[in-house]
Length: 123
Image (cartoon, rainbow, N blue to C red; front, side, top):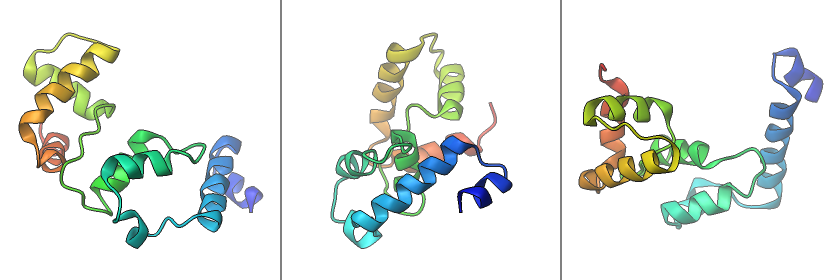
């Protein structure tokens, strides 16, 4: 199977990550029925145990297939770029994430919807 992944253009590293997800799913429950019993933070903690799965990936799972209403993917480049322009934020890295998270608190409990509007909007 690894050769099949490589044949369609996936790197060795991405192939390894796909195998990590597959092995984790064989060893652990990752069904939506199981995950829906958890908070967003618990799901992030649970799924980021998988090497190759980061917080942003889990947040996208929370926002889209799981339809969780209050997710703010602060590390998303599209979110950062537009919010920096709209709110006049001239910060980087940790300070930027802190400021954008602070701004997003006003959107609670509808942060996911706000992010979808940001992604669809013009700069």
